[in-house]
Image 1: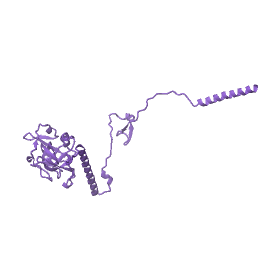
Image 2: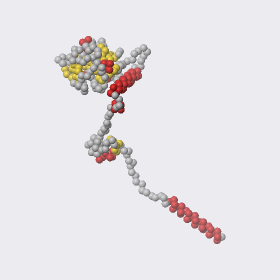
Image 3: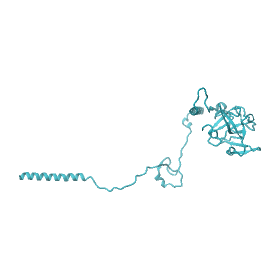
Image 4: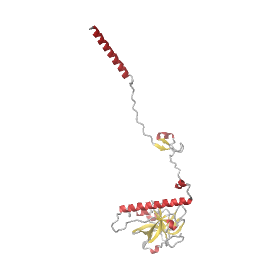
Amino acid sequence: MGEKSKTTLLFSSSVILLFFSLSAAVSSPFQLHSLLLRPLPLAPVLSWQDSDLPFNSLVETSDLDTVNSNTSLGLQLELHHLDALSSEETPGRLFDLRLQRDALRAETINSLVSKAVARKHPRAPGRRPGFSSSVISGLAQGSGEYFTRLGVGTPPRYLYMVLDTGSDVIWVQCSPCKKCYSQSDPIFDPTKSRSFSGIPCGSPLCRSLDSSGCNHRRMCLYQVSYGDGSVTYGDFSTETLTFRINRIGRVALGCGHNNQGLFVGAAGLLGLGRGRLSFPTQTGRRLNR
């Protein structure tokens, strides 16, 4: 009995020592820390660097606090012409490449217009499409511009017109000419058109011109100057324009009796800009925009 009790006591002591050893081994890696609640940082917002800071770099908004608040930020880009990628080509070859790009651009514009017209005005059997007009290269007329051919007046006199997305006023050369340049078609004679009508000086259309005046009959006069020094001057009027089978009446246009500058071949200009007197603005509502 004594031997058995001694063995039991030794076993119990060993178990107790093992328990404390395991407890110490397990608890020693863990330490208590105080948890501090802090807000999450905001995502950095990248902004273009100010001109006084190193160029071509980005900084966080927080770093811009050191920049004077009155200093405006800006982006600087160095532009290179497309021809710079073909610097080894001859001038003649570069000119050919430009013509190819222009021809492709004109083809793309024609394709987009045709698709838009087809969607808005599905073609009925045996019926021609609605409003459309071709885009024509002016090279055959000695010009680097794009032309369209449309009828002016009633009955329509078909003339080449420059397509200009950078200006607004529509105008044609009119007889009698005080000073006119050479054009491919006969000069338009307003006295032979039943739809030609002058615009009074006090009308909203006349006031929409950037540069206007009045003649002795109190009818509106217009003048448009272009960046290359070209200028057109004459009577401001309304007239009917015909695009193939579609007629659009009372379009405000200039009847130019004095036209000088770099105009070549075409009888006038169809302004396709965004101003109040451009062709899209004048006729947008009538053509469902």
